[in-house]
Image (tube, rainbow, N blue to C red):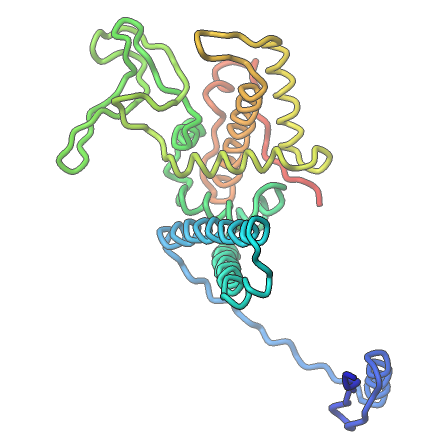
Length: 325
């Protein structure tokens, strides 16, 4: 038989049978003890300026550890399901310890990102109150944007995320670009222009997309972070998330505009997946606009309306908002 655990009072060393008896016993000590309050110490937190390159490395490290942890879990589940292997054998072989170590490292990386966000007003007053954004994605936003002051308008931030517009010349049948040098290699990089540098004809706007033979004019890693946030918004509940409600509304609008699927060669346009991606793209453009406005307001920088809003009065800008708890 197992020995019965006993509680021992650290003041009078009385042995007690269970937790309830221990709590009642300690209440008696508190009643007989005079009430004293220790003065609170003014603890000043030291602000440490962590370079954004290190924060970016911590963000990438967390994602790598998360992928390895999930892969390890799937591997263990596969061993238990497909082969004649027991949990005791998996534990004795040390596979469970590897999984636990990866999980602890992942938590440590997350805690380091949280420590970085402690003194960030944008996180305290805005980002942490939006459902679908956590410390990991917030760390990714901070580490890739770094300084919101380098984006003079919303269009530049959208272009950096790959959600802006490029330009295309119908006469030359090529997108507009500039020549850049990377090391010893020269290459063409996409750049929006009002007029074609070759034929001087007026260009037409096209969305940013990968083009063969041209370097992209956006950050691919930042684009992935923004798309991950967009998918996270979709997973939220509509009654609690404002961006999920926006997604549902925009999805209905796009489906109303394009009620039927269109087949062009081997491609099928306006399928359910296509409408889904179009709605996410519009939601993320609104989120990035709100992020730009809120961040610049907190930094005391000038805030201007987007070009399409300033050009005519038909378009309106959705102001930054947070979700209720």
